[in-house]
Every structure is written in C-alpha cells, then in structure tokens.
Image (cartoon, rainbow, N blue to C red; front, side):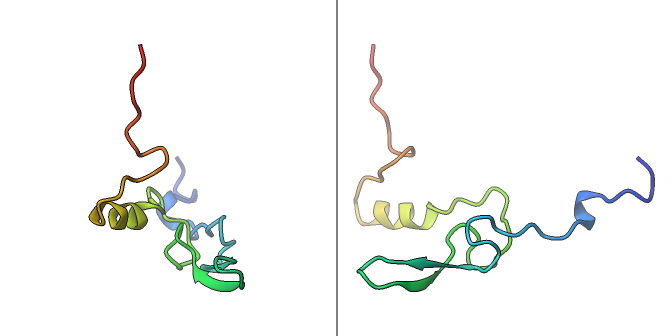
Amino acid sequence: MSTDEETPEDLEPVPCTVCRGTGTLISNLGGSPFEVPCAWCDGTGTFLPDHDAQAQRRAAAEAAGETPAGPTAPVAETD
C-alpha cells in the first residue's frame, strides 16, 4: 500500500442510511407525524458499525418481564 492511499481511519464518517444523515425520523405513531431520534444512529446522523438499534427496546421488554419478539426470541427446535 502506498503512503498516499487513504486508510479507513482517514475517511469521512459514513452517513446513516436510515435517516439519510439527519439523525431524525418522522413517526406517525399515535396518528400525528412527529420527529423522533433515529434509533439506528442514536441521533448522530453517522453510521455506527455493530450498533443494535433494538437493544434498548429489548432490554426494556426484558426488564418488564415481557418476551422479546423477532429474531432474538428463542425458536423452538423441530425434528
């Protein structure tokens, strides 16, 4: 690698593709549109590698004694 090539540390931050770098999303939950922080970038507008957007909700559900839904819920094995 030549010395004039960019390394990953030298590159600009990658914008979040979910919110398009704005850090906010429009939610229609409750019937009226309003801005909410993007869960995928934590409102930074920058892509966060290895970030789990559902971790906070999953932790709250587990603390309340609820079973989390989706791919993280245990799946029954079949024979």
